[in-house]
Length: 450
Image 1 (tube, rainbow, N blue to C red):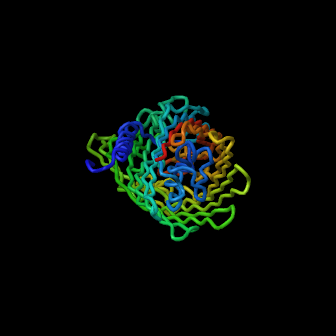
Image 2: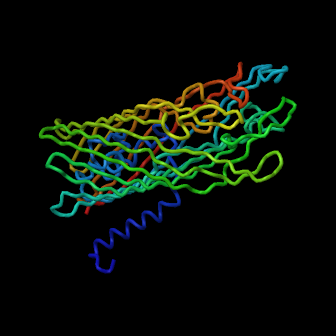
Image 3: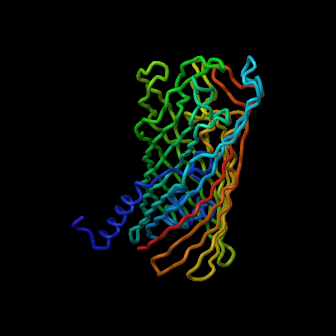
């Protein structure tokens, strides 16, 4: 470092400071395309996540298509946002639904999650050496996650205490944090064609209570025998990894096209230090959970003065991803998997250069809901069911080399509902479980060109 130019030392220092400052606040996004974060940073968010063929900023280019980073100016982008999620869990059990006249009267209730507010960080750095066809980049992103925190609620059947005090799951807690560090390289093969590659170094932290993926013990209660599960909150972080490849084509004219392939992100198996709820002996519940393969294609059009239009299409493969590909409980009462469906998503955005300093954007994102009604019951701790999002944003060039960006997104409420599913029993007639989720996000960011 002693031999670097002064300006290089400044940029390295800023990058290190960014990581140190933002690191402790990194928490997973809770409003996204299934498990996967739908956008990164205020610029990409305000474009409805469309970036596969429209490299407008370092973060969006690094996250969606590594081949496009060569068309981004040398820059460092830092963004952070405030996420305000709102989720509710409702359940109903009809009179006598549990057998032997239990419960004697219908029970129903609705409970809100004490999830709180979250900080969403983004870091992207891109650099092209003078007169070189090569471009190098590095990104730090949260790639997905979820969080709920429901209290015990005697009026809500599914949130009644676990046995022996009731037949519910008790206080329902779940949090998954997934972060990615992405060293990236791209090369211009011709004036119009670029390819890129990215190594993904991942970090995952999972905690849930109760740990439905472990075999329960059966205990007698006034409402009949019921399962009691160990908690799964005391586990260490797990490493993961994968890769992303991309291609970007800008033929002569006003159109550009891009495509990228992001491999599954393979994680170590999550394991936990727990206790058997029946006899107090040590227990070690464990669960395998990976991140799905993602394929993106997109195009952009610049044929209208001061206007850019971009659209991305995506496919996420949950049916072949560990933790999602199986469904239901096994013969021992342990949850085999979440039973998610494959999903398609669309991101569309428009950017208008209002003045030399001010840029305006609007975006829309649609994605299919990967969680079907039939599996609502054991996905109650994972409210990743949002389908429609609209975003507004703007950037302002404070100086030639420094701009600030802002974005606001509203994630429209969606809900799913299905029967209560109990281990050893299956779907219980005359019961229902309903999850509803919505959210708002405000993002701010700063970009320095060099």
